[in-house]
Length: 360
Image (cartoon, rainbow, N blue to C red):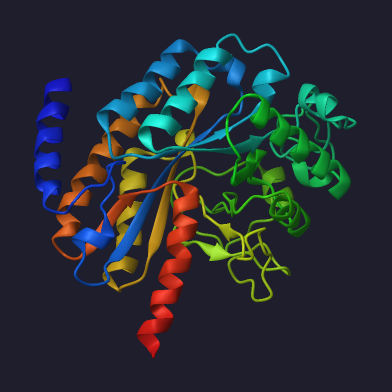
């Protein structure tokens, strides 16, 4: 396997030389483009649900993916619960995400589950119900808080949780997070407004509830998450409305602190256990159709930290496919690009400006 990857890497680097690569391994549009090209962004997102359950084999799996796919750009949605309850490998995990940021162009964002230890440190009263992972909302509960939606907490409580998170990131030198996702992809207009007010630019919560591709969550999730059939595996990035969290929302939009709307990045490929490698490849091809119509799009590949070793082969296969697509589509004027969530937002607004110019 390693020899095959090495040969492919040599071919990939040779072919991309003519397209001009910047210091992070991404195509430098200002140098390589003679005309406006359509971009299909590929985000690779890690969700830190249970940092204490991440083994060294999982950490090594993440390192393997990083090494095998040098153009890939992680967005690590990191969880401050790593510092509020015993996490055996927290120093090594923290070192890895920082290394990805400093040496491999990664982004460190935030992922929060409503664990009791986290809420206690934030000065919030813990609740154990309802659960998003049950057959019925009415009788559901979760004494760990893992599947309890963040949306049941008040705005004041949410602000305190987000403030604790930011202070923890500062203390641990993890940087200023700009991308956010609550556990089980739960969100609401109030939560979206809260993350915008607390300095976040990107929400990574829109989740396809259907089963066209992959598995579905438990029945209670569909009652509590806030997502419906308007979110599909073909959904593209969109501005978040003040009236609706859904893609059908209209102006006015929730503004981030930079004065621009926050952007929702749909989780098109669901997450590790739900989908096969062929599912992810097919969804990628669906988004490629948008680009062939001169429309920007984005796909998201998501994986839990404690599932990395289990699903290493699957994600390595999909990323090999993406690497090949970068080459084959460049010939047709379509840039397939690994991107962090924040860089997709930047591209979204650049694309919007270019579209307006094209209409004049």
